[in-house]
Each structure stands twice: as C-alpha cells, then as structure tokens.
Amino acid sequence: MYRYRCEQCRTTSPAAHSRHELNRHRSSHRDLFHGGHIPDGEHVIASQRTSLLDLPREQRIAAAVLVVALVVACLIRF
Ligand SMILES: [Zn+2]
Image 1 (cartoon, helix red, strand yellow):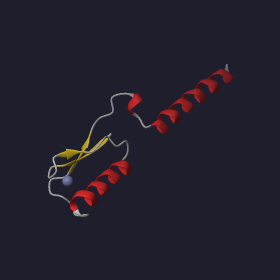
Image 2 (cartoon, rainbow, N blue to C red):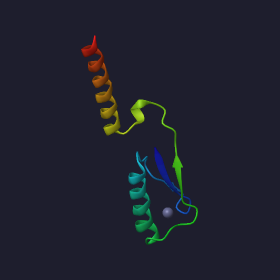
Image 3 (cartoon, rainbow, N blue to C red):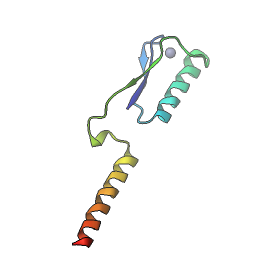
C-alpha cells in the first residue's frame, strides 16, 4: 500500500493499492496544486501489508480461486 506525501502542502493522499493508482494521486496533486511542476519534498510512503485482507480485491479473488483449484485437485487424486 502506498501514499503520496507533499511536504509543501503538508498533505498525504489516500492509500493507493498499486503503483499505478499512486501515480494517479501524484499526477493529480501536481496538476491541481503545483501547475504540473514537481514540488520539493514530495515522497512516497510505502507500508507493509499486514494481512490477506489488505490485498487488492482482484488478488484476493485470485488467491481464493487458486486455493479452491488446489483443493479440487487434491480431492480428484484421492
Ligand atoms: Zn503539494
């Protein structure tokens, strides 16, 4: 999970679940508040994921499908 921080404005973006989403927050902030320029002191805050529930929805679904497929594969073999 990532957050964009602008020290000039003393503000932090909402949490972004991917670098792509983070880039949207950053570009939007630069355009709206800095005329598209790069503000001094901006940075990205990356936080560690703490549980499966913090994963993006698509990845949770993919993990669930993988687990079901493994269980079914085990049941077919035995
Ligand atoms: Zn700013």
